[in-house]
Image (cartoon, rainbow, N blue to C red; front, side):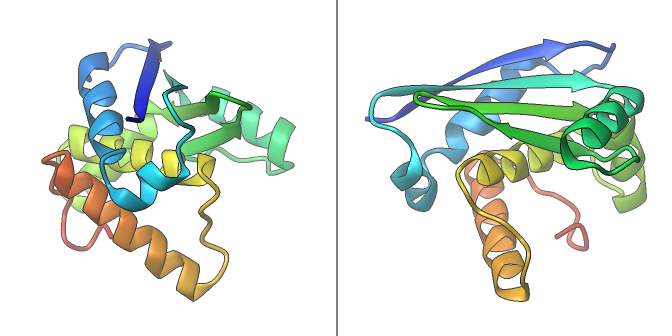
Length: 151
């Protein structure tokens, strides 16, 4: 049995409960395609909820892109799958833009980041379709319904 433990750090104030983030990620691992890429036993992920300034700094430092983004993933090794950094202000903006809840938006970004940590990408149209399919399926398992036009 594969178990994913998530450490959630709120570097900025946000109403999202760390337990919600852990639940979304844990339930996403029950999707067979995701479970197949997890290490046997217990693995971990760290999620940092922060602000645009930190995402911009991280994006500039590690990806060479001088702008804020909504989520960044940093690969780990062994049982630690890696780290996610999520901009809470981006969550709020995107939730408003797509007219769904902030919980739906952060859940979507968590699953998106997890997929990247497990070596999925969206560089081609086919890869984008597969990531979208997996994201929708993982969110459905977690009981999260994003706005129809969000994905």
